[in-house]
Length: 180
Image (cartoon, rainbow, N blue to C red):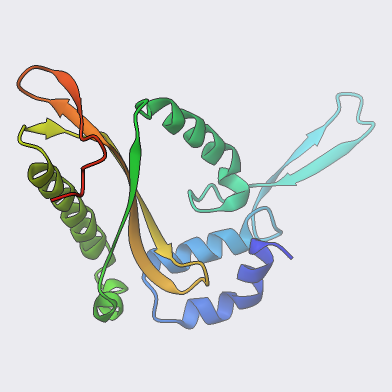
């Protein structure tokens, strides 16, 4: 059993649940990806010895079948962006009392979470340094926890230090980024 089988088995429940439209569409796309629900293409050798009919992919950016290669390319590209210095891993989350509203106002809450996380990072830097520095950080949104429960949160990989704006050199915090 793979992820698609789980979506196929539970698609009626997902479609009837109180979820945002884009979540329902993603679930339907994953359930239908490369199945008889999709159109396809017939590939045939010129001498007509054999032919193969392949179903189309959903091309949804959350579909594990469609995006496996893209995910690998993203991982390689992102690793190439990482600055050769120490890093911290931070996690920012919404309070649980917000969860019922997140499904109704999803984009607003996600934007709010990203903005609050960014402002918090800059506040931490301001408290940790006596200089005005620009950190390097990558933020990734996760919407569910390990047990597949709804749990919107952002993982942040942040450099231990930053670029000093006044003289354009890299300043390390000497592992004192959170020591204030």
